[in-house]
Structure formats: C-alpha cells, structure tokens
Image (cartoon, rainbow, N blue to C red):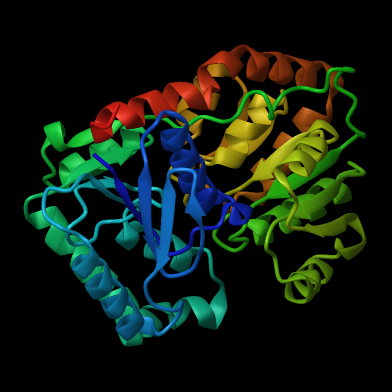
Length: 367
C-alpha cells in the first residue's frame, strides 16, 4: 500500500514539522515504500515519491476549503493510509505535531502582550480559517477518531480527557539523526555563557522572555550572549532586544542548514527554549544528542525525556525570567555544566530517529 502524506508545505529546508515529514517520507522510500504527497506548496517526483501541489498557499478559509476538497478528490477509498499533521476529514492517521489546535491558539494568546493579547480572541473570531480548523478538530474528536500518534504521555492524557479512546492513541517519542547531531569529536569547547535560541516561531517559543532573561542575567554579572537561529524577522525583534537593553548581546543568524546548526550547538553553553507550547521540541532533543544542556519549560513535551535524565533545567512558567536567568547562571558554572552534559550524552542512545521511524512504519501498517 502506498501511503499519502497530506501537508501544507513539502520543504525540508523549513525544519520542524515540514522537515520531519520530508525525513519520514525519505525513510519510507528507503524501506521500499513509495509515497504520494498532496500539498499546497512543494514539488518533486521520482525515487518513490510523487509530489502534487493542489492549490496555491494562502487564501484564508477559502484556500483551506479548496485544498481539502482537492485532496478529497485525489483520494480513493481503501488505497492506503492517509497521514496528516492535524485533525482533518478523511485522514486515517494523524500525527499531532503541534498538539491540539485549540491549545496552540491559547498558547499563542498567552505569548502576546498588551493590546495584541487583549484583542486576540476578537481576531480569532474574525479569522475564518481558524474557525474552520477549530470546528474540524472538535468534529473529529467527537466522532469516529482516526488513529492518532502523539509524542508524549501528557498529550495522550489530554486526548483521553476529551473522550478519545485509548486504543486510538499511540505514543511514539520522536528522535533525531544521531550521525548528524553528535558531540564535537575534539571535545566540548563552548565559549563562556554563550546561549542559543533555535526556533521558527519566535513569539510562541519565548524569544521575548529569552531577551528578558538575558537582561536579568547580565545585570547580575553574567556576561552572557544569545544567538538566535531560525526564521525570525530581524528588525522587529532587534527593537524588542533594544527595549530590554540587550541589543548588543544578541545576534541573529537566520536560517541555517542542519550541519551548521550542529556547529552552533557544539559552540554553545546551552540551548535556551522558554516555550509557551511545544508538544516535543526537536531542537531540544538535537541539543541533548550533541551533549548540550537545555533550559526549557514545563510546556515542552521533551521534558518527559530530558527532565528525568537530568539533561535539562526546567522552569514552570515561560514568563519566569528570574528562574530562566538563574538557570543560565547554573549552566555557566563549569562543574554543573559538565554534569548536565554527561546526563545529555547518557540519554543519547534513546534519541535515535530510527527507533521512532520503526514505530511509525508499524503504526501505518506499511512495513
């Protein structure tokens, strides 16, 4: 059976969900399983993969409806599993990469400040695409659910509370490419108090509070710097950094290749990831695989793995800038840093992406 992947974008360079799905597709092809991709943006054919862009990106609620309608016309009953990264009609298998859409909207609202936060609910009420996705999610949860894969026990519990049968849920923690994400063969040699923020959704992943934490740590005497990697609008975020008095301590690196991300991780004291919502941050797992300590929040599903192993320092609330600053000071201390690095490296064998892909292939029934 040839599985179909239903995605918005087919583009490995974007990282995150898109990068994961392209990697999964490549793994299926390597195992002799051809795949079809139905997307709104992307191209490619051959080597066991066919990619078809159905409608152009954008278009709000009407674009979303056109995409789903076009996808439905391409799918024939019983031809194979249909995998989507969110709850949509006719998907037989769903991986909740971003968690539940309703929860993601609430976290987005919480990550905002002032007037933007006050007006967020009004904006959502006026946003037809968001209303459509919320309605589709509620309908799927109330009806005959597809098979759902989640990254953490916490999200499994959340789905149970909403009435999803336990038999419909599978927990399969993601992994990383251990050949690529590995410690420096010449030894761990980061510059003192050099931290890294690695994300493509800077507001939701807590870049503002990262700036605040850097400001607090510097006022207390820690000469720390922060490198920002990802699709981050530089001008706007430079202004925010300046507002907190840390513009000279922050550099914006833009989007980097995976190989360059590894080099950045190897040169950093720790990964700073004060996220408002992250079902399981791959960036945090990649850091751990490189032996890099992580600072994150309880809102990050990766804590289920990093926390018990002692590979991360965890604050309860992403707005706890004092707690984040203390964690930066703790990681900057050489003895404590060495303990955290050893804990991260001890976790490394369990982070292998191949183990995760074995689970996905079994779940899809195409192995």
